[in-house]
Amino acid sequence: MKNLLILIPFILTITACSPHPGAGLWKAEGENDLGIKVLTMAYEGKAVFSSTRGKVALWHCFWNGADRQSANLDCTPSTNPDAEERFVFTVREDGTGELSQQGKIIAKFVREEGNPSIN
Image (cartoon, rainbow, N blue to C red; front, side, top):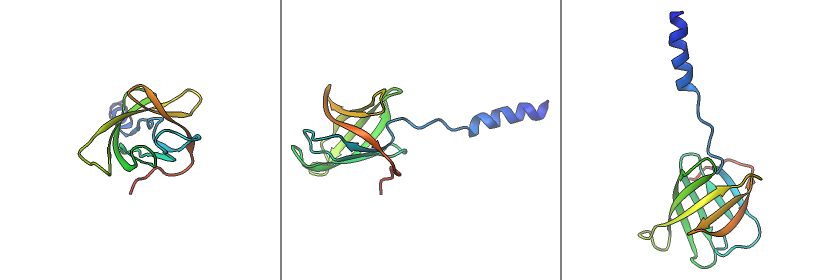
């Protein structure tokens, strides 16, 4: 019985939470206002994407889960590292993703296979 009381808390501490559904590699569906082709949201809370229209830059972001389906991205463009902009990435029920800023959808994405690591 004593061993069981020790084993239960141990099992609870080694079980991991499932990753946020936004974590992963995302490929843009069609054209979008910023010309984003790919969004990488790494498991450790970093994200990166390139914009080729409008504000042309490489965007470095930190993200956190806002809720079960959405993540807040605090991003800085390579062209102005002192400027920080907030985006929201939402995973829809059909598994697609949407990147928005100030309530306006900027781009829609589909999940890609692969490791979402950022070097």
